[in-house]
Image (cartoon, rainbow, N blue to C red):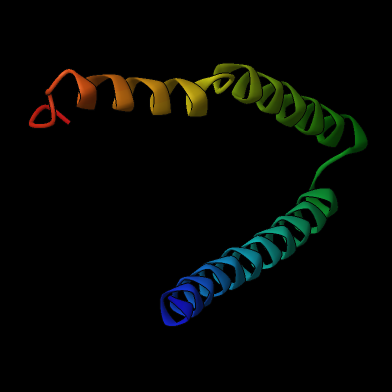
Length: 87
């Protein structure tokens, strides 16, 4: 039992490390991109760009509300109904 738990924890730690490194790299690239954008635009254009990003983020957040819970529920429901071949 301990060996299975250790293997599972190693897989989780590896996945977490990959996600963490990817997040750091993504944030760094976003920061560099914004610096480059600021150098070649005016304050007004950069403000409009940031406002557009905020609006897109809000709509993306609203559009994904309940997706995780809903997909879990429907997968379990269809598996119970015997529709495993469909999924």
